[in-house]
Length: 535
Image 1 (cartoon, rainbow, N blue to C red):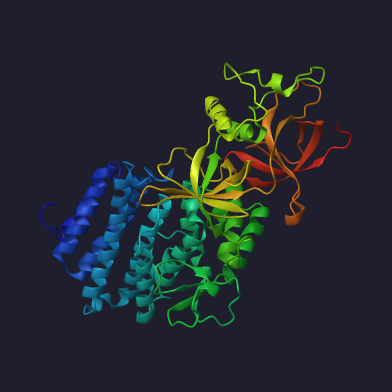
Image 2: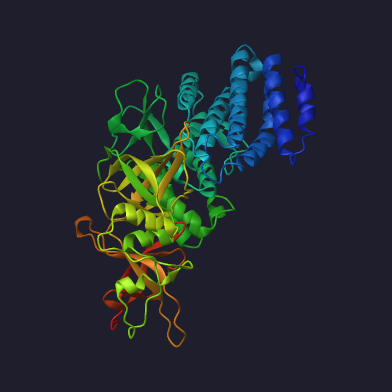
């Protein structure tokens, strides 16, 4: 549209949109909304167009976001422009509702729309933040401040708790400004940088669903030490109350106690056989995946903050990291994984290393091998590690950074890491990933307790040909942390009571798998017990 459109022309154009042509529809909506901002139509007519545009806008924004939501989005990616297009359209909607509210102060027909205008303003400001979470990018300065400011205005106007019709909020079909604000806070508490696209979509939906069970309260009276709160003058989400000035007039305490009770009821209904759609969580959720996600959200959403087990401290140096399963075993064991020999055969370690691997003879390992030679040998075999900058660490994990990023990592993926002050490799899980605006990728690595040992493992089979061994890892007991020994096996291996056979230096053992302790994208961490009579 070359000239600012009229409201009537916009309403007519909305009826002719082709949702299958995503780029054209997005461009039309952007031009239409921008034109209305410039043409300054009567606020009642402006609001009518905005409300009619919401559903097609949400559909086309969702389609565009699929282009960058599957993996963390680098700032120099070709899809970076798509991210900015999506955010700009959310922001244009936010500004449009603000414009209607400001110009509608003297329009009696809009007096009963104050709650709706406040809710829409907060909802679209929140969507801009969620889009950066979806792309695993740092949230720009000022976005959280705008959300807080919008909520403070709703409080002053006395409409924060008043619900407005909203067909885009499933289950309730309505939402107040306070509920829209709380939904934004819940998403931020849900470790958004550590979620897959599917999990993040569910979290956004569930945050809207569960928001009515939460409250924002003035003052800190009766607050537990684990409670969350926020300062409406800040530029971030919830923080532990102990880190805030609870005496400030802009302090608000978050109370999720009713939500905790509701989540417990939901988990109980899952155990009784209910499906997610019956609980208002959506028809695209499997029972197992929904139950697992609900459990992970129970503490941050319902119980409050939990202090770190170990103090995090600023650190420097280089950390070696690999996400290749075979490479992890190589660096722990000192050689590539190979099928164990029958007991009757005798081979020395040095002769074993001369077996063919990947079509080439493996060179012998010198007794006094240097770190440089080990790295050269690893890269020759395709088992090289990337070097990441150590940003800070605790006993429980690391925060790492790398620019440019060479190895693609996934959330909950098993990785092997060697700290700068250690000769041994540890194993851990990728907790979260995000890109900074300068192109640096940051990764949170949560270590699995125990010094890992590489093992050969296979399912125990009776009366059938023995299966080949696969590489796994054994984590010994850590008595100081109250951690029993566990196995880390390839993803999908866990079956309750399954018998597996592992071969170690001391011989063969049969173990019964007991409980799934942790499931990642490519591994299962499992508790076990010895099978009596095993050798």
